[in-house]
Amino acid sequence: MTPAPQTPSDGQAIADRVGASLWDLEVIETNELTPGMRRIRLTAPGLETLGPEAGQDLMLAVPTDTELHRRRRYTIRHFDPEQRTVDIDMVVHGDGPGARWAATAKPGDRIEAIGPRGKVVLVEDADWHLFAGDESGIPAIFAMIEALPSAASAIALLEVPGPEHEQPVVIPAGANAEVRWLHRGDAEPGGTDLLADAARDVALPSGRGHAYLTGELEVVGSMRHALLDRGLEADQLSPKPYWRRGVANAPHGEPPKD
Image 1 (cartoon, rainbow, N blue to C red):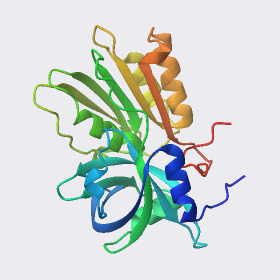
Image 2 (image 1 turned 180 degrees about the vertical axis):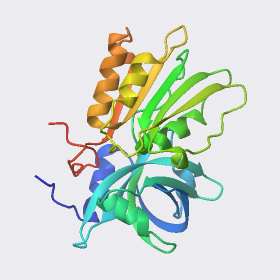
Image 3 (image 1 turned 135 degrees about the horizontal axis):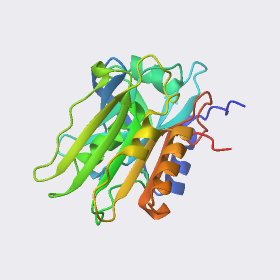
Image 4 (image 1 turned 30 degrees about the vertical axis):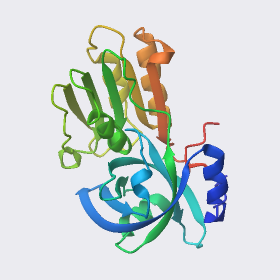
């Protein structure tokens, strides 16, 4: 069953319940990053106090065709407290309300947001970091890579349609991070074993590391099982499904897990 849209009037109640702030954001700039991803830059009075950790997100009340709203969560790709701006990188393929809003947003548009939210952030004492996900996970993965401490070691496994969907990332000085791109070609997103196979085969550094797994719900589950089979413990894994193949996200902005 498709979840009922929510009006934005309940935003303050949700913000209070999750311990976050309510923002009235204005679009000030857009940029096409790849054929499938668009960057939306937003601002608001007082946004310098947002203070997100790398990997956290904002819950946006994206409009629908019926003038109601659905809440969808998107990672904060960049935060500039001096300029009072946040960048949200949004996938524009598909026909969901988030993708439609991302494809058409223009300077002057306004949108309600709640945040920062999210518990999947860098584990500071990990000996190494493994990031894996499809294009929906790139904003969070890149935000965390760019926040790596000096001397950190990291590997990123990223599935995208092809080379034209690859993006650059700034690796902090002193950090050792490798990005491996997996091209699925014409296969549907969430319909390949590329990430699960890569999680099963990737050479992992010595020591106790941490894996951050993002993307389609069943693919995230397959990656999780592959790493558990390799001997990682459950507390070394941060699985975070962003979407579910063939199923609309729930009203709270995440894929239903039933």
